[in-house]
Image 1 (cartoon, rainbow, N blue to C red):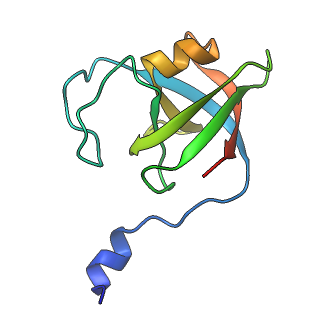
Image 2 (tube, one colour; image 1 turned 120 degrees about the vertical axis):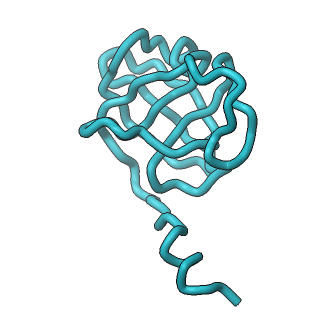
Length: 108
């Protein structure tokens, strides 16, 4: 049985595609992500504010059509207007070197 406190902390899943800005992060190497994993900057992982941990997401850069698939293992981004923070390796795979406008497609 879930407690009221646990219900308040559980993010509501987002099932529809999202469009917005993506950025990347990598300086947190070795720190723990929000789901307890050790952060690896070269990984194909990402932070999202509401998607459940383990969700696989296709990130498509709108200006180039280039895409990559990431697994959500952290929370963020915490900068207004951004919808996902990619680990540095995932950003490289998508061809993102700074901030880019992207479409997120939920795969699983």
